[in-house]
Length: 590
Ligand code: ADP
Ligand code: MG
Image 1 (tube, rainbow, N blue to C red):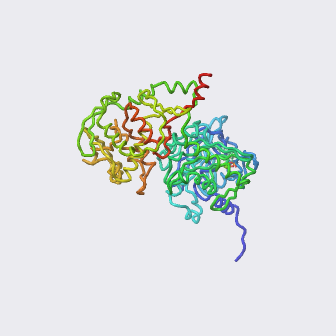
Image 2 (cartoon, protein in one colour):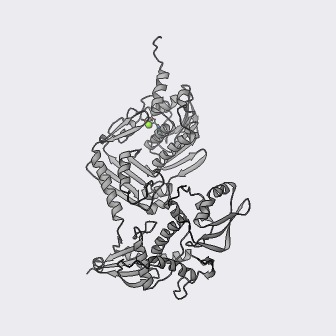
Image 3 (cartoon, helix red, strand yellow):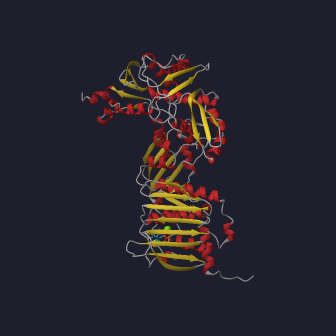
């Protein structure tokens, strides 16, 4: 066999095929170019997992008419190739090669306009030929990549399914939106907008907006530093966890990485706090001199090596241990001007009251007797409502045998919402509603596990109209609705009727809760689905309590102390706060 020299085209194709393994590599390169161009808005569109169509559009500086052809030439770059810059993590051997590599394995069209250009330019590549034309467009760049590996069928075969490729891309897109806080990202998959992130949002808001609204109240901020590494970010509190690792993101110098070591170190701190096979959420940003990292681009896997790895892992481990540990204590109030106002201002409470507008209801108690009650006597302690008694009896039943809990001395009840206790040099303020919610949540989970949820029958059944898709979803979740304590039944092709609800919830004012529950992907696992149940609790509201007396306050305190992690509600907010006498002295400038 004669040895032949491969032509340049073939060499380029082979080289590009090695760098561009799948659609995700293209998206990564294009988005990073857009970031480098100073864009404020970046839109990424994919079809069929990016195999047939990718478009990345930005409002960055653009490429001028004279340079657009050059941008697609090998080793052409407007960026200084300096291994010290932050991009070193992704750019080893990849400087000025992205665009030419992409255009040698797919059909590329680029449209771009700079501020100075009168009119935009359009360049099209196919089969190694290009042509440039003029086109009216806004400032910025749009790059369309079609039919990946159309000219290398052998490589096309190695692409994963559309869904698998799209999933990888989605995670990357979330990582971009989380990592680049000054840029708004829009992500469109098969013509459906998946998300549009808001720029200039704090990390907590960004991730709760993008991933799960429950995160906002369940994240603790991470900040740690040693000689070589600077770490920021957020981790979930122990009462928030997921069925998989999809909410774990680690960035090094703003680039998403995967690290088994770091993941293991973080998860180990949650071990005794969350159930087995459940995973915390975390968003960790590591910043370091690029000299401390070594990125080894293996054909299939990116391995990153840290210098001073032990120190880095220690730093992460200790800061997370401290954060989680601290949160197992009573939150102490530090009085200052604003805090004291907050404490005395009950407008907040009024808002809550408004939320619980009067409704008629029929309550089914244990012996299936029916009692009617009206809700607007909420504040009248003398006229205690039947259902309040009912809830309380249950509560007392369970707690009356616990005598070994040390109760601080009950002082008074204020604003019909808080009980004040005193103990040596500390004042405790217990929030009745929060404490009751916490206890009810635990009970809800327990009853759910025992398939024994108390129900309330609705005087006016709730009618909900559903489309085909909703009905499909409902059919697949019928059992779980039943187990949750809902009596929901389809009475026609488009109408569903809810006749019973779990007793611990208020009667909902609209049907939003139903759609929310419909959209929860319940774990089929039979163990408690804490996160899912909390979503339900979030879309419905717990029954409110009432002003309580000394005896009830003490019982409530005791029941609360029996709870795991008693000082925090299921939503991470405190149930009880303390004020030290010293703090008060400081406040009065004594
Ligand atoms: P590199 O990013 O390493 O410089 P690329 O091949 O990715 O190499 O891009 C080549 C050049 O094309 C860049 O240096 C930049 O000048 C220009 N370019 C690419 N994408 C964009 C974009 N979205 N906006 C403005 N300029 C771009
Ligand atoms: Mg680039």
